[in-house]
Image (cartoon, rainbow, N blue to C red):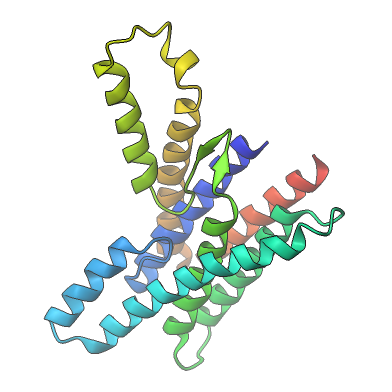
Length: 217
């Protein structure tokens, strides 16, 4: 089940990251892009943009760390389904972010970035392994490098392998996560280009559907 769920969450991760960048020119699902954007903003003396990108980085890291703090005590409650709880929290944060950006409130862009970054940080820290391998559902760098390193290792190894699927059973999982992330990014960008801030609600709807599926399983 975690194999499918990791691909589903990768779709949400791509959706949220691309949609946030279209709306606010800030990445909300990883650190590297915002470090580069912050450096560019500093070079251009655009201090407001630099602070915004740095705040997104800090919030993402807080979300990742917070997920680990949440997970530990919740494991003591066997009747509580951990992943649905985290996904529900994520859906609430994304919904609040979308409504905030669509409103006339002050600092609505900053509020949107903080809420979405916190949501994706929680997701990134909660589901870190699936099928016995490390996975990332909010950015592709780890997945792509994992695929390349595994394929390179397979071809340069002097030990004959019966089949790639037998020796590297998780290649399909990593490839699926990558494809899901890209499809999610395209969908998220299209939704916010069409519906503006409210297009972000699509990610929350998807999370609710995944919660229902996880609870039934």
